[in-house]
Image (cartoon, rainbow, N blue to C red; front, side, top):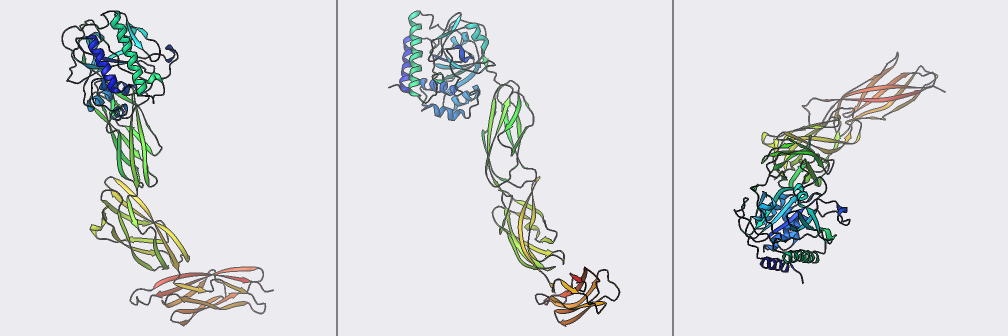
Length: 563
């Protein structure tokens, strides 16, 4: 049975077999090759960087349980695959000593001790991982599973390789190799070359058998034993990488308001960890409720910029969005935002029931408010959305501030505006505004009430018929009555466009009622309409010292001509 331990033992056996004085170099090259150039192979797996790192760490006897553990350390992967900076961070987090350098093939040969080397080649086309099986003076032999080995001219390899390399070891490793020239494994003779090639194929088969979940053989990558000879005067330097990393990759914003006037604003830190200036070419979001803008698209080496994000939440509940940053170095950085939308101001009851409200009568009540966010809010005021309703909120100075820990009782006074408000059920909103630093929040609290008239005209409409025997027609059965026990102090009426010999008289019936007598001119033909305006002073029984309320009513009168 082929297991990670058997792979490790096999590689260690190969190291002893070849007796390389400077140890082992695992070289995993990312070579850009047209997919059709090697027997029509399919597209590369973007996770191949994780597969390579896993094999290197297991071969160096690091306790890595699976590729999934490596992928978890690496985080999200873009379509272009993992970045070299991600591989470096993941190797360190898994306990290895690692360093990123700029180097050459000959400089790698000068290194001694056991270490693994992941190298990256770049091109304008899509990337593809292959195994470097042999290097000689003119060619680099690469194995593209399951096809035959392919020889690539060394000059082609050098043109496509950006000279960056990730060195991994069990002991501290330096960017500059020690003096001396390593011995070439492949220069030993044909037998050593054949054994090395066999090791590559056997190792690939083992990894493929253990990792059957891969969708294509092309995605199965191993580590090849590579011994390099030669000497150049180039001295490797610490690698110069232009990789942008968002930290953290997932941001939990917690509770955010759904009713902010200009949306909820936050920021994402974007840091350039290399020493090449990069530029954010485009910023994209996954939903229309999220808008992102980069403050400074150009990021200098080892510096940061911020991505300003505005979330326009429209309904309560959990929300999620991603912000994708496309850089000019080909890297796409993705940051995920999660949040829970809540009203900035919570209230109870859900609907404020005012009950029966008489025209022009005041009602005292209370609202209970608290902050829906995790911080204190200051109430700025309240107003009604219905012109028939006046609203007033009274409180002491310390009641202007509401907290999330407790409900705050806010006194409420409601008064209908006009005496002519039509009776019946009414509904409006109380708009309560709060200030949170520089942001302003508002909520609409539903209010429901029923208007009952203070004074009622019985009947509400008058119908008369002219008499041919008289120039006038009269009506003496209109009653003006105060409701709810109020006292009707005075009553008077006038006719709009009053004509000659027309009049209105009010006669008291009792403490709360007046009888209205109407006299109108005769109508010769058709039907005429007149308007009677009644004015009364009403005083509530419990407010004898208060000023009487002035109530006005309109009674339409219809007069038909005599037959």
